[in-house]
Length: 261
Image (cartoon, rainbow, N blue to C red; front, side, top):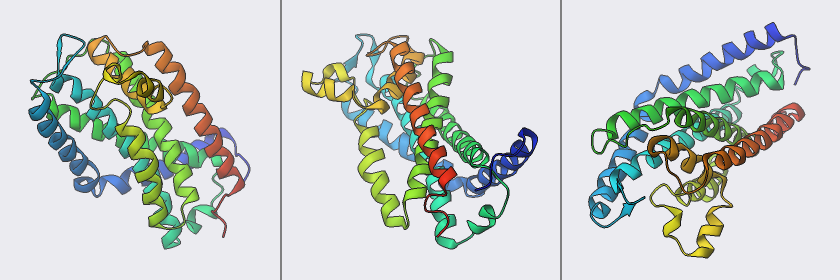
């Protein structure tokens, strides 16, 4: 890739690519937005119906209300990852990645455009999930700034991770393996459907090694004002993880890893 251009040129190129990426998922919004919202509603209906009378969290919060922020954040994370990873692997397989490679876009422009578009998709899906599920059990909104902070940082981290996956994968099977054996398990085991305080000590400790746990726990804190760990600790962990993944992504983009073949 070319060296970094002046800031105005970088922003112009990144803005065009960002628009293209947003338009790409919005053109098929029934699939990219509607389907994840429906999936989250089904999770809420099934788990809420089965466990509502059997599980109480933080002594005062119904299980359905507790579940909603977890489902919203899970949707944000999974769709932010899917946006960058699917776009890049499709471009590589179809061969139209060459049209980006011949442009003077810097690695920073690629990174900003792809990740920003993934953040938009993650927030759009998350907002859709919240608007639909909130009618079943309003969770409240104790500290909205924490909600916005963790939604943005979580989508940023997963968008960066999606770029890494898209660069690494050479076919859809590899991409599916990355998502099914890394992203999905780490999301499901991050406290979406339960509080980690209900787990045995060993699994509590294991959960605290999962950065996805801190994204969901910090996000949930914004709704209830209580969480399994301090939101400041979660913010630190998520921030360090996002910076580390972003640095690796930029390094791979700058080297042209698996792009020029």
